[in-house]
Image (cartoon, rainbow, N blue to C red):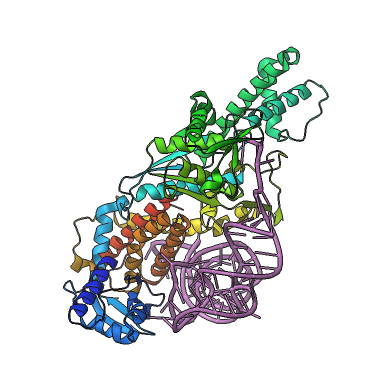
Length: 556
RNA sequence: GCGCCUGUAGCUCAGCUGGAUAGAGCAACGGACUUCUAAUCCGUAGGUCAGGGGUUCGAAUCCCUUCAGGCGUACCA
């Protein structure tokens, strides 16, 4: 619809130019928007105002020239007007809206799917929490956003792969092993001095108990290094299992779990450093190896290999991202907690130094979640062991409600998640408002048809649909039309919350309509047309919720 | 100090790729259930878009600046 309108305006411009009405062949980019107020038409353009300075003509005069040259062979425009400072408002004829309903029925779950991705391969890495403790609520936000982002991209024609980067090498795993081992000793009544940097959560004691059940007092006598090593492996495996389970219960499944350790084992870290050395991007200072990231826009150079010859986490990350691009991904997306933002520049520097285009690398920063209980902040620290686990929240509020809360806010806004509030107001959650739409529609349809998924695909022609002439009905169809654009914008700006607000808007239009007009009226033809409309609404609601990883309900 | 994010109704937040009179939900107040599900709807009230300056036909939106809050500024991961 918008494309058609855009073409009409462009044609009009060309025609007017040929006639000599405009001094220049240059034209502004045509923008078409939906005015907030209905009296401003279905669509409007500011093209005349934007052209004013270019042509040195009054906007209203330009607008008039545009209108004088408009050709509308399909008759989609009912009338036009020039308003305000020079807006051109278009009123679309009702009959032009109805084909959208047919399209929805025809395409079903695929309605709204776009192909802006054109099959390009995208890797989305998210969560990637260290396997040193269970997932907490902050990880949940990243999980929800990453997952939905992947879903949206997929719906837009990208070939998406979800990946979790597993930090299973390095010191924190050793610390984990030591923490567990110390708790293990405590179980046997040994007095231990529990160091500050060890993990203090309850789950460490649980794991220690498991090891006690398994190995009895064997490790009390064993070599400490051996015992710690065993504890580390055992604990990391167990925690990872828990992470996978929690994510799965949250509705998130990964295509690939990428092990940091594998980068060491396959020599990819050394390889990446060697590659940089050959390109002279590495120098030695104070016994360490430095990457000249400042050459590529970073604030300063960064160490990749420490004095003690160990490689840094950054070195792993360079190798990891090299590997990502070598696997043939056209676009690499990261979802990170905002506390990692300082890391972006150096990684972008690395990607450029590797010879890849940093435009194909995108980081989505998700602001932190402030966890509250009755308005009182709860400190969250894995080490201090004071945090609320994701699985606890999911258990209390439900997967869908928790996802919705995470997704109902822009990811760059800090999120206050009040546990008591989330529980107490569960019936006020907009999720139920949206789900109620599909439940209501299902209920209506089941009263008329045995099969709730009636297919009307070829049953209705446009003339039958023309019975839908209430303003509320036209508003709904217009809104249904905007679904695809919403999805595309959500992908383009990496803003999954746009889908949520779209669905709330559509739900609001429906509930309003439902209260004002009876769908199952005595007029048989009108009734069928309205059911046809309702069914289309349900298709889009279901589709939208599906993108969010949330179920559309048949019953409340 | 520097960098990133945030500041919009009493509360929680949309709106920010510049558009017309700044919007929802909750809370408050008043209405609508013998009805296709009231988990809904309708109405009333509520605003110095943190403050100041600038850019222009037009600024919540862009630029500068001040203030407030969060986060980050490792040879940690």
